[in-house]
Image (tube, rainbow, N blue to C red; front, side):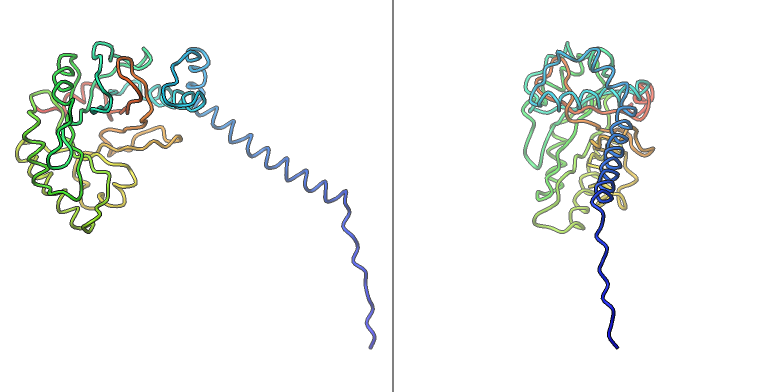
Length: 283
């Protein structure tokens, strides 16, 4: 039987253009919505920047990057103005004028500082001694940290820290900074080494050390075995505004500027006020 042939009706160009317009408007609306949410979420930071930050030194960032960093920093600190705020330093910050390190942007008081003391089995931070003494004179609550090198002997690293750092009453507990994965050993071996460092340091100072790490690193490799240790977590996510309940400290930015310190500085929030922070210190 012969079949009938049907001609497909051409799609109207006008209908196609109309569909494209609706897609464009939908995408534009979604983007506008995200921008509006961002502005609302960080409204205090935007207002602060527009009112007070137009002549700020941009340091090593572009003007736009500096502006976004300042907005983020102000917004987070504004939401935690009842908590103790501090910073951390090493020899990379060069010489510090400690008499100027009282506030961030003249709005938020600085209460504590973590200072790098050692790294690996034999490295001593070249400015630890002067920073340790000067921070005490400045009457900041101070703490010392060790940068752990996964491929070096853990006991020798602990001995390097103990030999270098003399903690006193009123100082924060020692800190183990672990950020890198090992190149020549397994993750299980790394965990054994970390545990040996922590146990030796705790035995010497009679106080449980703090673990510092990035949130992803901690969750992926450390949380299961080391959740009984106080946590200092680094998370720079632009959209995160608050600490988790089990975070003792939150390092929320590496891009702050503090008067008296050259370049950019890490800023941290303690999960409590200054009086609560003093209770965490060595007695």
